[in-house]
Image 1 (cartoon, rainbow, N blue to C red):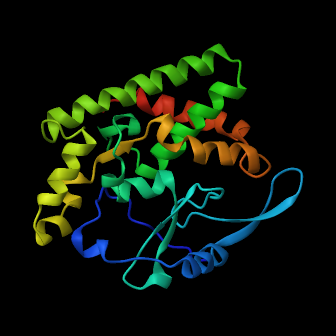
Image 2 (cartoon, one colour):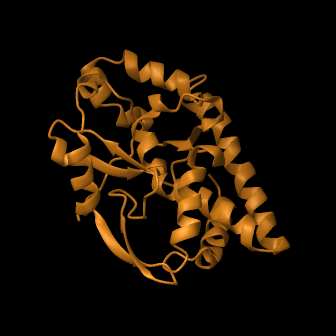
Length: 225
């Protein structure tokens, strides 16, 4: 299995990438190459792993990002795939763009999943209060993106058009403009992935371990921006 740092800078499928494709045979090889055994709590199963965040993917929750060399195409979960392929987020319910320099995209994805799980399994007024505050705080970052970066940049469709219209040189330098912007996923856009984790991965990635994560990030949010 490959262990590499995947760049999750907000991106689109530029014309030079549209010509790339992956055959069913190559996709099967990629899935096999990036699979590991995990303990679900009841049994050991072998599942594919996202090459970005390292969490399991399966049952239609994985995405293959084609490369010029098909065997080097990326196996990603949907939360890691969509920031790199914003133009595939075609529904208004797919979330929005926020300005958040202190939390990277992988942490945003993990936090959203942790919040969703915690609402399902905990009966703790204090924790639920933290969840509500975090959600509200992150939602406000949408306004910050429009105010401090560019008007309407929080709109995924608008940002997609901006990235399409950049020439090749500007697009390669887009990190300077977008380095503090994050995709804020909606629950609907990544629900299949979270349902898969819930059914198959509690043994190794128990949500009960996320209590401290939510509280620590909640305290971080109280600090001055």
